[in-house]
Image 1: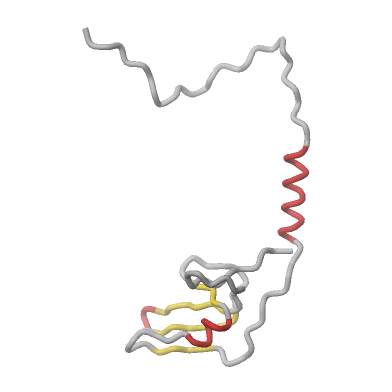
Image 2: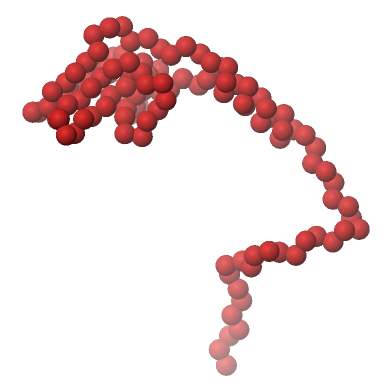
Amino acid sequence: MRSPRRCSRNGCPRQAVATLTYVYAESTAVVGPLAVNPEPHTYDLCESHARSLTAPRGWELVRYDGEFEPPPPTTDDLVALADAVREAARPSRAADPATPPPPPTRRGHLRAVPPPQ
């Protein structure tokens, strides 16, 4: 099951059910149902914060009037996590001790400098 998205408000541990988006060109704040994917310039809010949000002075607030519902659980992330754990648990192939290790392909960024004479 996917880990639920949390409210973006500091210190709020509740699950997000709404998305806040600012439309700067129109001085509008829009609170709607939770977006399918998190976006970089939006904020996920719990129901309490979504309902009590106020817009900045001079801005219009457009709020979804319906019920905010949490997203349904999915198994996609669980399957990906299980595959990653299985891959990590596979034993790595032991290197043949007769074969020398390959030479380094890149020099480190640090080097010893001889002392001044």
